[in-house]
Length: 192
Image: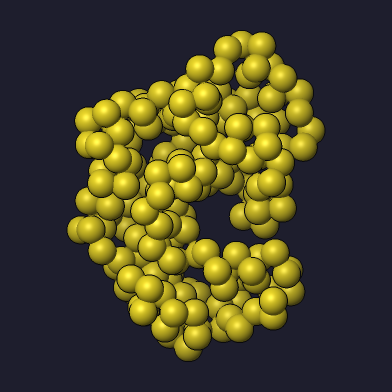
């Protein structure tokens, strides 16, 4: 697929272009996929999204397709095997945080029925459309991501600072930060 983006961040990377054209900014309401983005955005902390995206299939494989029920039960043996797995980012703190976050994710599902119902409250249940004209107008965090970060941390989540939460909001379509001239912006508008 040839990218039709105006947004400059995917560059010439075909996987990044495909992600831009088919996922980034599209409103997401599937709990499993929301958990996947939560995990991947946590692993992105201090790294590039390109690095994470190119390892996503490996992450899916070793983290049981992001099945939060299974991940919440990981024991020390499983955690240590993940720390030794060179196919993913071998960050001990982030791997342990994934298990903690799966447990916290399940508690939210118990309380709200779905994680989707809980998380979308931070954007008022709809996509916030910033309509940036250039990349410098895209914020790193917002009052909404601050509120999300604060509440997730209060509920026991790790690696959910406001900047990570904002990246999650972009990925999950809670905000639309495609540049004004980007043709994907129109697709998202019709999708939401």
